[in-house]
Image (cartoon, rainbow, N blue to C red; front, side, top):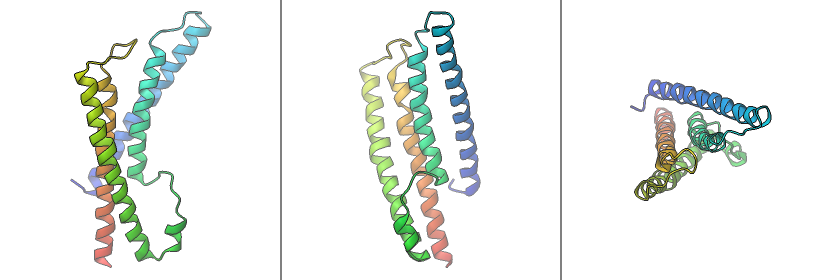
Length: 162
């Protein structure tokens, strides 16, 4: 389950989903601009749809870059440490990210999804249940947790072989 092959396969799936979402978002915004300036009749759903696609791209993209370990980071302390200290610090950092993803994204996001589902909140124009839109938050949190577990497992296996 936590093998490098599984991680690479998951990376590919997420990358493909992100590309599709971005392409759809570009088409959606292009239609909005075209309908507004060429046809003088702005489309009513495109603004809301692009907002929701941006949420999905942002949340999935954050999980994706966390898995690739390419997120923005200040690494001054990390570069000053020896290799053994770097591994320990990275395990600590990955553990903190894992706890954040669990508490804020998975637990908090699940509560948000549950609340919007129970209250039957819908989007203004598209009338999509907001629980579907917000469902990406706990899902992305689970992806981040998976990636952090893989990273910690990798770092501890390196430490064990040295």
